[in-house]
Every structure is written in C-alpha cells, then in structure tokens.
Image (cartoon, rainbow over all chains, first blue to last red; front, side, top):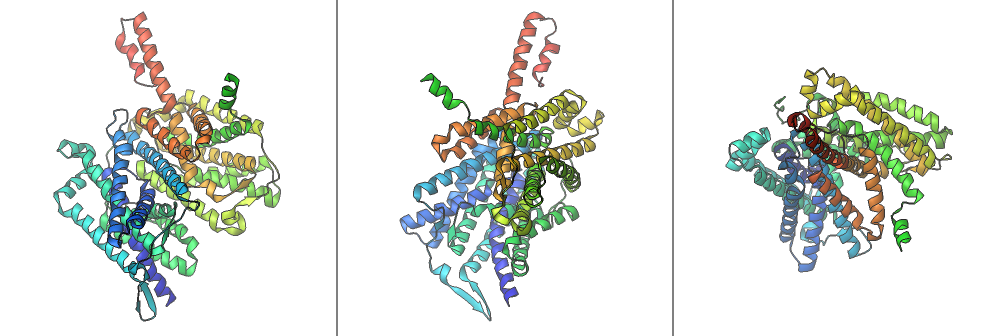
Length: 303
Length: 306
C-alpha cells in the first residue's frame, strides 16, 4: 500500500516535471539553447505569483496566471538579453554559439538569482516564501487505502492539458511547422522566411510560462518555495529531456512521468535523498543505450 | 587620500591566495573550453581531488604530495573513462550531460555519509598550503600551457576549435586530441581540488556543484579561451572585481552576471581575444604604412589571433 502510495506521489511529481521539462526540451530542440536559467525562472515566477496573490488577495487561477505571465516575461527577457545577441552577432558563429549561449545563460542565472536574493533579503530574514492555503490545497481524495491530495490531481491534469496543447501547437499548426523546420536547421529556416528570432522569443516565453505554472503548482503543493526550489527541477529536467528525447514533447511527458515513478520507487526503497542520483544513473544508461532518447529522432549529421 | 585609494584597490593576502586557487581551477577548465567543446566535467574531478585530499589527510594522515599523486593518477584514468561515453556528444548536449555528471558527483558526496561526511563535509585537516606553494603550482601549470600553445599541439587545438573536420583533413588526430585534453583537464582539476582542500582545510559538497561550475567557467570565458593567459586574467578579474564590490553586498552576484553577459556580447573570445584583435589591427596598420605594396598578405593576420 505504501508502495502504491509512493507510485501515485511519483506520478504527481512527474506531472510537475513534465510542465518544467517540456519547455526545456523545446527550447533545446528548436531554439537550440540549453536554458540553464529555467530553474530560476520557475522559482521567481512562483514567488512573484505568491507575492501578488498575497497583496491583492487573488484566487488560485489568478495566482497561476500571474505566475505564468511572470515566467513568460522572464523567458522573453532571457531570449532578448542572453540568446538573441549571440544568435545575431557576427562575432559568433555556429561553432561558438553553443558554448556562448550556455555562458550567457549562466550570466542570466547569476543576475536572476542575485536579484531574487536581494528581493528576499529586503523582505525579511528568511528565504522561504510561504504560500497561502486554499480549498485546493486542503482537500484530499481517497480511494481505498491510498489518498491523493486534490492539488496532485490538479497538477497532473494541468500538466496533461498544457503539454497536450504544446504538442498540438508543435505538430498541428503552421507555427509548429516553423518550429520543426527550425529544429532541423536555423539557417535553412531563415532562408524560407521563418523569423527565427521571433520564434525563439515566443518559444522561450511559452517555456517560461509553463515553468511559471509548474512553480505555482509546486508552491501550492508544498506550501513554500525558497530560492533553490527550481534547481532540482532544472537538474531533473535535464534527465527528463535526455530520457524523452531532445525536442520531443510527448517524450518529455513520458520521460517526466518515468522520472516521477523512479522518484517514487527510490523514495520507497532507498530514501528520497537518493532520487537525484538514481535519476542521473538512468540518464547515463540512456545515453549509452539510446543517445537520442525514447522518442527523439537521431540528429542529422551535418559535417 | 591617494594612498588610501591605492590601498583599497590593492588586494589583501587572502584575496591573492583565493586568486591563485581560482586560477588553478580556471586552468583545469581551459583544455576543454579552448578546444571549443562545452564539457564541464572538470568540476567532478575538482570535487574528487578535494575529497581525496581531505579524506586521506583526516583519516589516514597522508600528506600533500601523495594525495596529489593519487588524485591525479586516478583522475587521469577517470577522465579517460568518462571521455568514452561522452565523446559522441557535442555542443550543447555535451554541456547538458556534463552538468548532469557534476550534479551526480555532488549527489554522491552528499549521500555517502561514512566516507564524505554527507552535507556537512569533512573538516580537521592537519596540513595546509600557503601562498608560496599555490604560486609555485600556478607558475608550473601556466608555464605548461604557455609551452603547449607555442608547440604543435597548440596549433592542433586551435585548428580543432575552428573546425574539427577541417583539422582532421589537415592531419590532426582529432579523437586522440580530445582524449588528451579530457585527461589533462581531469588531472589538472584533481590537482586544483587537492590544493583547494589543503588551502581551506575542509570540504563541503555545496562548494563543488553547479555554482563552482558557473564561477570557473565565467572566469575562463572572461579571460578568453584562445590564449594561455586567459585563465590568469579571468581569475584575476573575477576575484578582484567582487572584492571591490564587497560594499555592495548582495548586488555582487548581479554585477558578476552583468560583466559576464557584456563580455559574451562584445568579446566572444574574452579579454585576451579582444587584446589580440586590437593588437593585430594595430600591427596590420603599422605594417601597411611601412610596406603598402603587400596589403593583402599583411592585413590577413588581423583576422586570426596572434
């Protein structure tokens, strides 16, 4: 029974990972940047949502919307300040683009986490922002001997809906067709008239918005967020991205649920502090067995 | 007044020592970054070296030199072993996976209480290194890089960085070069880790994770990855500037980030790269004034670095 409960918990956490990792995966696959500031985006968006909710006495939906908006703004800022200057600079070429975007992402990570610490210190002595409790967070659904907090169901449903919507966007719309073209080759996409810069900004904003929703939901579930909450989501997001295949939206969803299940099982058998280690062992195993992930496609070799 | 201003800018001895350690760390990241790869596994070996030194010293009373030898030998093997699963990755995927490697090592450090002391780390080392040992170590490492840059290997590294396929066509054994660089990076990282542990006298896992990675990579990038003085200059800048900004308290991280961002925008090859470009332009212009007959041949060096 405890095992079953842990599995259920794992699936719920997996939902949060899915929200976080989908954005990571599509920015990596399509915009070709590894957004190391994704975790801090999640944290800041969650805290912004909580602050607004407290100040203006917002409901849960409005709170999540503020989080999503904050995340989208941070995502767009990341594109404008960190990634676009490098993509459009004539001092960078394809060979230096990857390492340069990684480093500028790290620079944004320093700026954002430093700014967050400034904000938290100004607010008060403690670094933890607590979340107001509401009906969503108190309710529990029970079936037989296992019980599920209502917020868990909300997380899972939100994740399924948003990831599904992203999948629809990428696979079924004209916008998504442009995304898939960019995933293959930025230069070629530009030649056929795709506005690579605008697309990247939209992608980063979308990914940030989903991180914001994830942060808000996680904050509601655990009732608190501190400056390092996003770090674990970023690192396990990496594992999810590699498991599911870079740029694959359904892959990210399945990968996230898998990581969630692994987390549940690890917590049951070994203890929750081992989660990260076990997830990374899976990542490396995956890398050796199937380097392009469960649902990813092998990259086209461009010599 | 002037004296006070100079005294405020001059670094204290502690700051100099921190600079020496940072420069050693920066040199361990340099081999990978200078070949254009974004592998950050050096942090894992820094952690390994530091913990080896601490555990050997605290539990077994082993001193500095044996610790360096053990850590470097094991890391050489480890660097080669880690190179094989990672070698088919490149660019941003390599960055992602190497960050995962670093996180994995940190998570091992946190979890194996009996050996690593868990989140609290290990303390109580009985030996220390001072500024002179650190300086000697840094001079040695920097000299090695200076020699390498001027020899055939340095040329091969620059060729691989510019274009791996092109380098291979011109007779560079690219695979073997990457392997050599991975091993060199691991050995230097373990060495820097041992020195760092011996300087501080303790190790905690929080010091050997993603923040260290960001700090060291930003030093190397700011200094520049195309000249052997890059890590020195980067470490100096990123040690001194936060020190000058100490009165600003928590603004330091923000300002470090802004500096890094500005450098990546305008000086993709870091400070040394920018200096090289300016000097190249200046040399070209002067040569043109002397010998205007051959502008094409003389102007060409301004495009590549000296």
